[in-house]
Image (cartoon, rainbow, N blue to C red; front, side, top):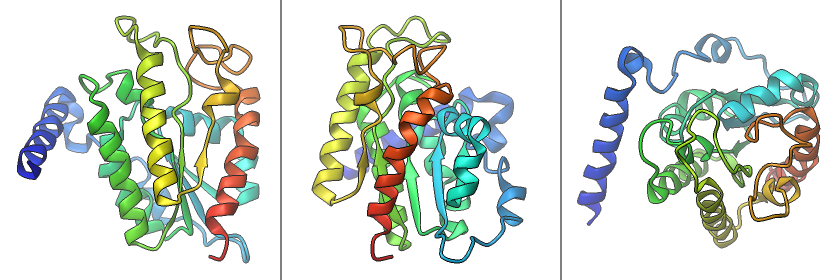
Amino acid sequence: MKHKRFCLWMAAVLGMLCASGANAQDWAGLQRFAAANNTLAAPAEGQPRVVLMGDSITEEWLRLRPDFFADNGYVGRGISGQVSAQMLVRFRQDVIDLHPAAVVINAGTNDVAENQGPYDEDFAFGNIVSMVELAKANGIAVVMTTVLPAARFSWRPSITDAADKIAALNERLRTYAAEKGIPFVDYYSPMVVGDATRALNPAYSKDGVHPVPAGYAVMEPLVKQAIGEALCGY
C-alpha cells in the first residue's frame, strides 16, 4: 500500500512538472527567494524568527502589510499560485535553512483551485502533514491554519464545489492539529459569509479569494496568538 501511494505521489509530481512546460526547471520556485535567503539579516535580539509559508495570500500579506512582518520578525515566503506540493519541495530552502523558531503553514487554496491538476484531498493533506513533520524534525515549532473561505475562483469557473472541498480539508487539518497538539489558526470562521455560499466576506476581499487590508487585519491577531503559543518555552 505504501509503495502504491508513493508511486501515485511520484506520478502526480511528474505530471505537474510536465504541465508546467517552460517553468519545469524551477517548478517549485526554488530560485524565487534564493538571493533574499542568502542575505537575510539575523533576527533582532529577543525576537525569534518566524516564517510564514504559503501562496499568494501570504505573498500579498507581506506586500500590503509590510509593517506587520517587520515589527514582529516575521519572514514572508509566499509564492502566488502555488499548490501544497510546490511548497513542500521548497520547504527546505525557504524554511528549514532559515533556522526559524517557528513556521506558519497556510496551503490548500490552489490545490482546490486545481492550479496544477485535479484536486485530491489526500494528496493536499499529505503534503501539509509532510511540511509539519519536516519542521518538527528540525526543531521548528509549527502553526497550522485553515484554508480561507472561497466559493469560486475567477480563473477556474468550472469548479463549483470549492466551498465543500475547503470545508472538508479544513476539518481534516483541524482534527490533525488537535491530535498532535499543534496551535491552529481558524481564519475561516470570522471571514466566511454566513449563508449557503460559504464565500469569503466581501468586506475582506475584492475577488472572493485574496484578502484586502481589512481581511489581513482580521487574520493578524489570530496568527500572532497562535505563534505565541507555539513559541511558548522556545
